Amino acid sequence: MVFCGLQGLFCFDNVLGLIKTRVNLMDQIKTNTQDRIVREAERKQLTGISRTTAWNLEKRGDFPKRRKLYPQGSAVCWLLSDLQVWIASRECIDLGEQNELN
Image (tube, rainbow, N blue to C red; front, side):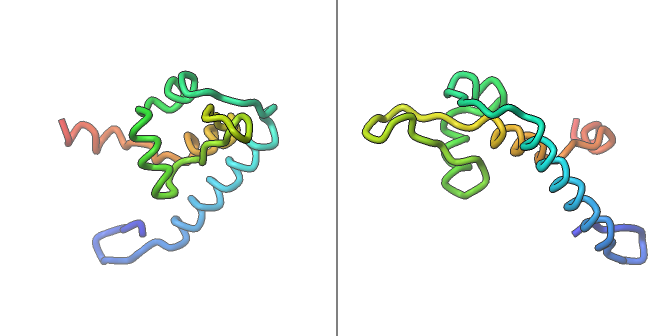
């Protein structure tokens, strides 16, 4: 929920608007991207998170699932579009909040 104002009103319209915007953005990414396979090194470069963090997030359902490159192998990959959707879904930091943290 997003808290708006001093009267304690919750702005559900703002939340719904944000959700719709993110869904539209994700649809555009999947439509406009020519999908390809991304291996671990590039995944780390794109997302900026470690292998362990990605694995933990994946276990919780908060990160795109890995895919096997071939049935009996141990090599894994991700789809570029899945990673781009995940990146686009990350919350932006308000610079005012960041200055308060420092």
